[in-house]
Image 1: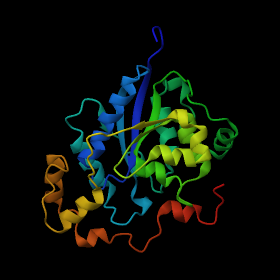
Image 2: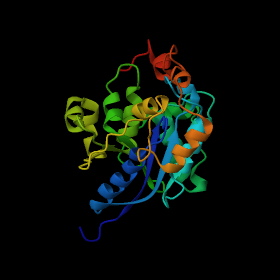
Image 3: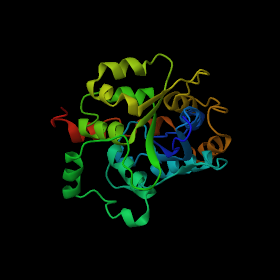
Length: 269
């Protein structure tokens, strides 16, 4: 493989981060090791992008708190950063558009006059055939996620098929395995994911670490210690702000999740 070109990569993780956990951060390290071990990539940056409040997920606390906790969790990292763009949008933004936004931000300034998706531009994008790379001079962007996100592609009305094709076909996906999940089997069972399988990097976590934000919130509600599950600075922030109570867990309990609201009744084929 002598003489091959090394591709610079930026890893983008989208999600609730409610709260951010040590496993969220560990995913970045696992993904970087895996990609760089191939000899084809050099990971130059990681981005955490918390979802906005308009996502309406049950128990989702305010974005200002989730952003601050994410920032506290990365203050000792020399390559993982936090971006507030998605969380500050007044409406829920599809992940495909978030990926596109960050991809555009990484490109040379003179080539980023299409940062905002207009109706005309969106139609043009849909007409284009997805490719593994959109070479515009900047680093390549890949979406980083856990196996649960990959498997959520199969949940009716949660994702648009065009968005899945854009994310996986145009940018690429780095998926971290979890105990009890089989990403390869899921990819094999999906015609679309199978089509773009070469753009999906499945990373096995041999030292399993099943930290669940849901279980962390449960422990916090019950007054149990969550130390060593979250960065110490995040634990202190939660205690100082009095976050994650029985009341906060019921937030949006009677509200339909934003993508289900948007896509119910719409064709996903």
